[in-house]
Image 1 (cartoon, rainbow, N blue to C red):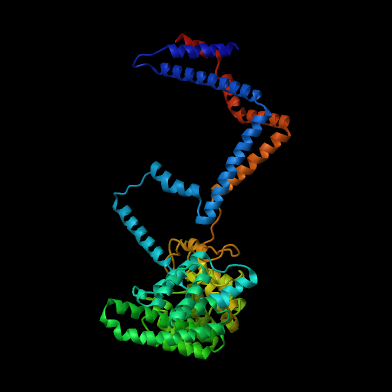
Image 2: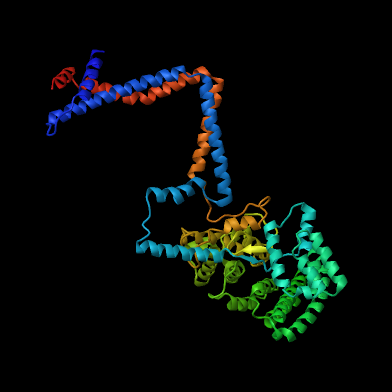
Length: 554
């Protein structure tokens, strides 16, 4: 106690004493020791106050404190998990990177390097926007004969509202024009394509046919009312007769004005759509050679209408006939660097090269003697296909369950992988050893592209928007969307989950064992402050008490 009082006097003397400019080193040392002693006394008094405060707390306070902390941590956890599942990133990390980092660190936007980097980011964003474009599925099923039958059997809706809304927009673009009000049947169909209720669309189509023959009305009934492919084919044949008459009439008048040109463009789209769907009906009914002939004729008659991607229908039909030479000829025409790629083109090219070596391929033999030139070409083709769409192999190898393909797909996304595998799995199984070669080599692709979102090998970096678009296109109620690259849970979600669990456990234990938890809290705090008390005792024991008297005299 005497030493404590002397330290207090020293602290008071230091506070009351002010030295002039040019003070010696002894004065500085004296002031430093006095400050240290005063801080030590303040810390000790603070510890006593904290100890008295903790002694007055009741167990109810600890229960309320830990319960409130657990509740807040749980709410943060739920919000973080929801945000991560929807957007694929942590909200806290995104806010930290986007808002806090510029405030704390700042970015020099005036330097040329930053300007060029921003231009590069703009280019990459434009590329990602173009790659995240949603395309019409060239092999889409019939709503009435296939999608609705699936709903009747399973009670599940295979199509999302977003997917059907895109189809409605496509129908309005392809099957309507500004002059539809001049013909009553076309005016009714223009409203029918905008209807959300399927029964209302079917009723409107029948009303249009009661007025006059209308090709688009037959198309709607074939797509949505026909319950079998045979019925759909009959309706499409009726639509073909009417569509050809309208096409020849508008072809003669297309140069008479912008209105007639729009009519001719609409009639052309209708005719191409009808012929393509008729070819698909023939393919589904087993008349594959007839379907191939219809597709070839259609591609010769309308070579500029590449938006329908009829060559992908042709590739699938030729693979069914096992006419691999013609498949290679089609690939030579459409697997060009200037044309947009698809999973059908990349994986069909890989299948043809794998077919040449897959029947004799053995991983053990290849590891001993090395890969031959043909095997190396096949492996490179598989790596190229996997880089373009990394979701396909799991479906081809039946590591992930298939669902009905959507009416629209996102290239390089899970929706495209489902659409490709749904029709082409049988062709891979037909080639002996092809799936085995794929199984042994497909994961090697990821060693060449360790950072696929930043830099690709043969293609552009993998677009980051595929997961969000696929969740809109695919029924996530009963299908788990494939994500690439696989995202790990952010640190903040794991930290919040641990904090929530820990505080909830503390609240429960404090409620059940209040006295024991009080003893535990005091022991924890004393252990926490033990190093500080030890340091202060060592300092007091090292410094002699006479030194303080000398300092006060100075």
